[in-house]
Length: 207
Image 1 (spheres, helix red, strand yellow):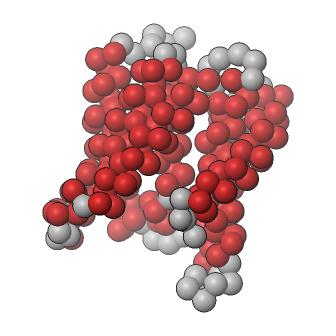
Image 2 (cartoon, rainbow, N blue to C red):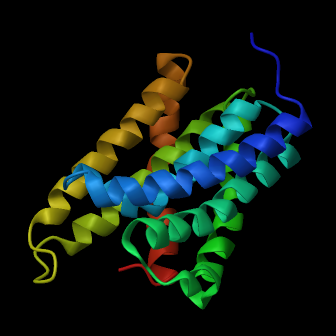
Image 3 (cartoon, rainbow, N blue to C red):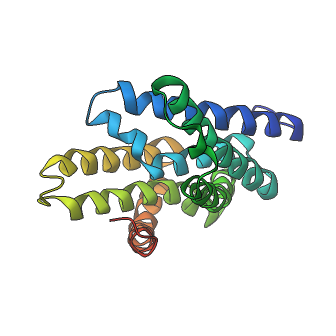
């Protein structure tokens, strides 16, 4: 078993990892073809990144939550700075209201999914709910895409977006679970969590 990272490594990984996440996310959207390229527009993918950060930290809910939140907050200006450098977007977007709103969402997602990452290494209900949460947010976003099927603005494109997110959710469960029983229980737990996540997306204004 690898040693757990100390606080200094956690802080460094949060800062540099967040910048890298934001930069790569923009580049992914710009250069990777649809439908895979559309994952760059996925807030669920950022939530999974926070989960992976917590999984890497292994223990210490406060360290995992704070580090994952910092990473997602830093990723926002990293994204917009890359957009300004690569395609000449306005630098003022970095401190616009929308950027600040995404940073607030980043804090919330970082805390929830960072802690979930540490739970995966735990025992009892935590090792079930831990991997269930990142799968659930991907399933919830797939639900959003399913709602868009047939809409004149989207056509049938959301079918691919939904299928990719469902596949990623199942992949997360397969990789994070240590036994088939844990994976099955996490899948069962992910389904109601996904419905709650879909409701949260709709309340937050995602359509």
